Amino acid sequence: MTIKNSNVFHPDQDNDLEKIELCQSGNNEAFSFLVEKYKNLVYKLALRMTGNYHDSEDIAQESFLRAYRSLHQYNPNYSFSSWLYKITLNIIKDRMRKKDYAIPFSASHPEQDPEEVANPIFSGGDNLAINPEERQILQESINNIQSAINILPLSYREIIILRHIQNLSYYEIGRVLNIPVNSVKVRLHRARIQLKDLLGKK
Amino acid sequence: MKNSKCQNVKEYIEDYLEGRLSEQEAAEIEAHLVSCSDCQKEFKQWQKLFQELSSLSQSSAEEQLPSDFTAKVMQKIAQEVPASTESWWEKALHLFTLPRVSLKWAAALGMALVTLFLGYNIYFSPITQYCPNNLAEITFSMRADASQVKSIAVVGDFNDWDPTRNLLTDENNDGIWTVTLKLEPGRYEYMFILDGQKWIPDPSAYRYVSDGFGNKNAVLEISKCKDVGINE
Figure: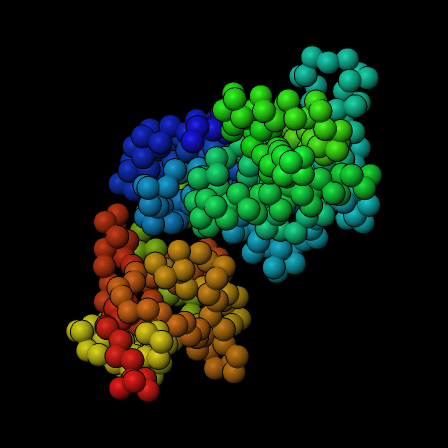
């Protein structure tokens, strides 16, 4: 089956492998190439999962440090990005379990950084060439969907984000979540139905 | 029949919106939507969902880490790899209240702990053993002072190296952390992770194997099980 819109980002697996081998033979600088290449994807994943800028930067950093330390266990059959996402999600779940910080994010959170409220993370973006009215509509739509995602159970939230924000294929999602492709499809369907119902209630 | 047609369309709406259908299949869906207001209503809800997800995805493209992020990570990594002859996991051992242990000591201690905790469950040679349902109960153990170590996880081939799945605990506060897993016979490589950060091979492992990149993994081998069930 061909998947038309699944790979906005094409990880260059051969090139990654080369860098990973260099790291493993003691060349740390090769690792900085991988950090540079994947940092914003990891950050985006953390940001959408937690809704918190500061924590997300911290989670991104921990993801790379953990990846570096376990590089000797990296299985080249995985794409590096899938492996990295897996690590990131584990860190996030670990933190949620320990209740290190409140999840999901909400605008009324008492510890919310005032700067973040004033400048919400769901900004429509200044670079989009759209007029203010359109931007406001887009902004509302973004706030709407993010707050619905925040209500989803964790297993639904992660699969929605992997598919629709990270643009992973079903196969890649299966690798990240350790589930067969069929289960990806089923879980994604259930997650979407719940999300659709949540949006319908507004 | 109208109902089965509707059911069919509903089943494929997501595939349609993801662009997974062939031209012909897509055309069939479109044709039905024109003629069926119920399905059209449902389709619009799905379409709205996909549009909103897509706008969220676009806005995410602009969320970026500060430009010095990579430099910060690399700096942390550089701090972790000191120019010392001591290996990283020997350093990790110093976390414990045990006096500085030499490797020989660690091995001796390891054997003692193995006898205590792993006991008769593990053999290297293919000795048949009793394990119900073809699962051997294996207890992993590690000595650590709770004032210095907050968590110990065991990761390995048996749990997909997932540090969140199997955590060791020290319920009676005797400084010996344990976790018991039921494993199928086989050969597993594994490591302990302290506080989610320090990777060390089990000091009480019977055997270690080079991972090919300068570090060592602990190895666990469980021989074939002999299921002493009622059939025997």
